[in-house]
Amino acid sequence: MGLNVAANALIGAIPVFGDIFSIWFRSNVKNADLLERYARSEARRTGLNDWLFVAGVISAVVLIVFGIIVAIVWLIGWLGAAWGRV
Image (cartoon, rainbow, N blue to C red; front, side, top):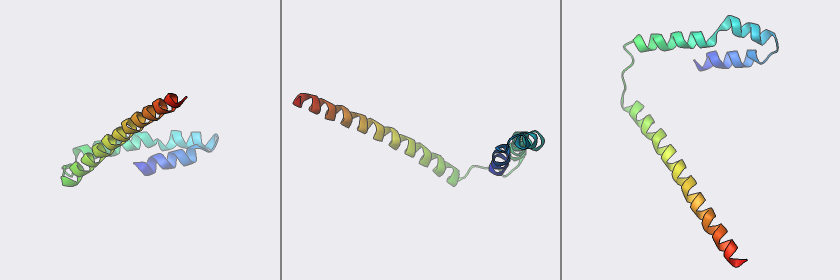
């Protein structure tokens, strides 16, 4: 799927020829067909690796949000101390 989109983006960047290629290549239609075929296949079992990936993504998002909150609290404290000295 990524190769379909990448090919469409790379060749699609060429003026005029890219538009003609996009109309002919139809990467989104190919990707939709790939997804439908995968959804119907038996290889669609979720395993431990899938759940570990989801847990990792959720952990990364939580850590990023926590880091942003800590940075905002630190910035507010620093600004308050700086205004107190003025």
